[in-house]
Image 1: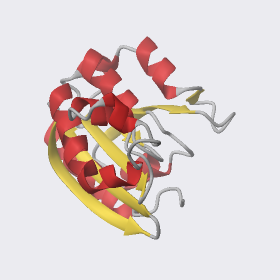
Image 2: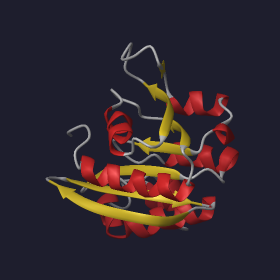
Image 3: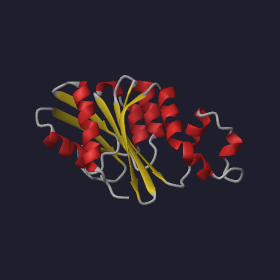
Image 4: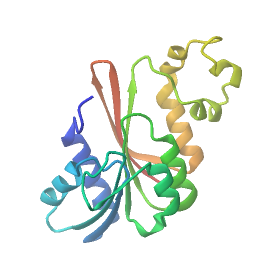
Length: 186
């Protein structure tokens, strides 16, 4: 997968979030910071807004201003209410990170990138919240690919049960992946 593909979509969704926040100084938790491309670009796109970002990244020593480590562990140790916006720009489904946000800072808006491989598995917690019996989640009983048809409904149900609603989203198809970019509020 290409890091920061569909950058225009990512920027548009984040601009909408920042405009809704309505502050001239915005504190952002960038839980998948990478090399900081998105928020560095946002600084150029919205020069009248002062962005302070705290980044988290698994890769070692990308930047001295980025916390190195597992974002789930780091997020549990932070006061997430100190941020105006939380950015979950994941390769995959950031269901665990979103649950942490909902538990500790539901009032803070979240921007999400959720990427799935077309025939990849649906995370079991999404299926559980949708009422799918646990024995159905075993690949030996039911092929996971069957669940993909309803993946986005289950994702939206999961978000709703956490207390979030989708304010804006856009879906892109890339080869064997489906990418959903969205803005969630409580």
